[in-house]
Image 1 (tube, one colour):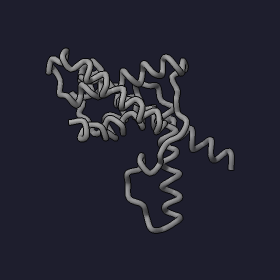
Image 2: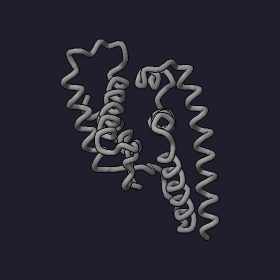
Image 3: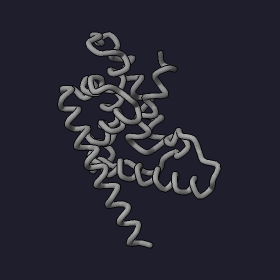
Length: 168
């Protein structure tokens, strides 16, 4: 179980924090907490959603202790986060890299709840129901929050792109 769920949990924490080393540390902490809480697991949710909830709580706990403003972003492993195929054309690669960086910056500019919902839905490909269980909210709340998060993400991307244009 650990091996098949550790990669998605690590991926989630890496996208959430933007820091490879911190994501590794939080992944280990998540599974330690899960192991300690296993006797209390009531099977009201799947093990997967339970672990995502523990991962999120572990992340929030770490952020609240060490980063009062809630932002950790220091660096990210672009190769790991991209996960996509690279074009053979260098100009196309550069464009893809710029778009990816803009998207990642925009995601890190979002409030934590919006960032979490977008990461879980778009990158981790979880259902609205699974996200609702992870966050302890209703499925409808998740749908509305996801819609608002996408709107805010679009606005943020446009603002970042306008900022780049004014620098040029």
